[in-house]
Image (tube, rainbow, N blue to C red; front, side, top):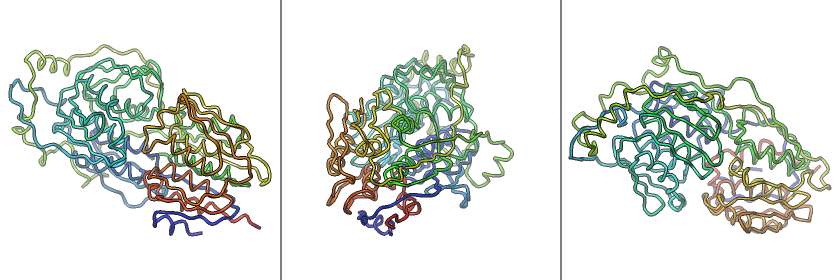
Length: 537
């Protein structure tokens, strides 16, 4: 099979065969962690070094936006530690003087803003939402744009909490383009109703530039990569518990060295392929095992699927020694020296109108000692990393070894990216499955609930969506039924689901728009091809 040939044409037609997956593989660097590492390094003093940064389109959007804002990101020569679709790089932060928190406000009635910075987020909701928290205190106005898909997604839910910190944000209705105007931020106590890691992260990034202590209260938990990384970058960050967070603003971060673990959301599709192809035995190495990301493994385990995982020891971020940092990053750009920066006169011009009282209060907030917050810094430890082992039943005539899934609304936030894969496996389970509280899926690249129903219906499974819950009744025959063609509509996770499903269909079918896989896992087909073996004999 030549998957790569089909992949480059934008559609894939897989021949009918019985396959088995066998061997070891590694995943691209975790997309969520790659976004956050680049952003925090852009706010840090010194030069950070990362290996296994994701080359996915979404992370590239973040990288490009940060470079436009003044970060210097330089690729390192190929490293043997990099997984496919990953690279190593040095990141020198945006000059500190590019953020208003490093300057006392002028007492002037004149406001003269420079030209806005245009940031193209393309299809990346993570880029748009998280970087808006960085732009809130940036010295120039920023305008965030997206492609046609991202421009339909809600941005109001990230604008609302940022405005509570004093950010000046304008939206086109509730969607992109989003414009930030330079603003001095103030600490606040903010309660987040939505279980969105993107909204929470945008708020935490903005709070780093709000002098004083910002308290973030969470009604529902979500993935915690930002919290874990803040400690590694040296932020003064506390947690009374996982749902009560404190950030001390007006603080510099330090540079780090870090080997980003493999993306567990990408691994989910290899796991699904191995479970569906009878007789498979696959090990996925150096993959992130964050408890807020491995929920799909817990769901599979309790449903009776043969999956296991093991954590490695010590995967912490390491603070960069400044002497070594200067040598390693020679030529990687400057942060402290700002000969290319904006002149003092231009900076004075764009300061917004502030009263004498507010200006004085700001300077006091910068210099005064704040009360010590009672909390446990160890609530969030370093990112766990390890391996996943998955096996499937060798008996090709028997039903699947797993039962139907019962996923609660509380669990959904921890497996939002893996729900399409779980729904596909539910179509081969021995009993019906119920996924509660999946409305968030309707606000992704596509309406993923409708997309999942469309794919499963084509494969012969019955679905029912009502009151926020999706019920999947499995197919009765030994294979998915024939499908002539299926259009992914540009959704990368739906494309990978369709590609995995095609391995166990009774006849081949054509999958349209597979280029979108490059958003998160460009080498998915190549990785799958290396694991697949003909099992027709």
